[in-house]
Length: 262
Ligand SMILES: [Zn+2]
Ligand SMILES: [Zn+2]
Image (cartoon, rainbow, N blue to C red; front, side, top):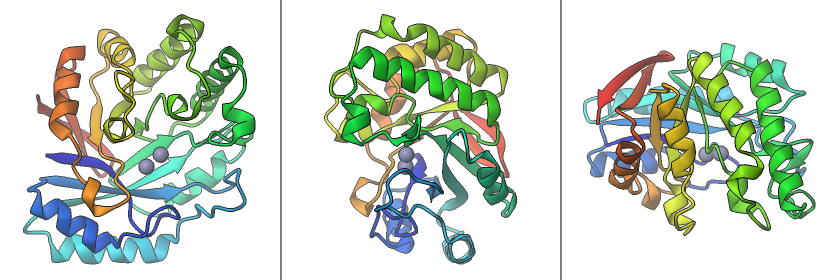
């Protein structure tokens, strides 16, 4: 198993010690474990502080990677929140440390936290075209990431989900851009925990679009914020990937991609 999206108490929304997370990963026999704590400066909800204490984070990552090196490969990762107006901040954080792996995610869009009712409760068509249009514009500007995190995260918070046709052109443009830029996508298995039913993250259609357009870079991550969720439903994600036509699981080291056949 490979878990390429995990958090710890270095993230504002997790209380689990990094060592506890890692011990759980070892007990599950996980081969590679990417720690990807949040870095989301200028987060659009003042109640949350998603700045990352990079010095303390790096020190703990290196201590644990060395301590458990014989049992598990620990990747030094980060989940960057992308927004149009804070691109230089992102670049500065990433350049300040030799990360193995960077997830680029949208937790805010168009100046709002996407969970905020005043955003998520917009009419479905306006919300979806706005969200994916915003994502496309940002990804044309910001390139320092390896995989796009939870592509359709908006599904989790939207008051209602419109038909795919309403915004498919934007998704297709994003997929083409990702592939042209050499970027990957992830299967975020938290969708199986949230009880999204057939509405997986990404959707089966998004994954098929990516595979058919020649995309090959795909990671699988639990997005665990507590030890119990580490490695969650990895096998189901791999099954889903195969069904969509994906042939490999991507792994990273020093921001370089490698492929494992699935
Ligand atoms: Zn995220
Ligand atoms: Zn996350």
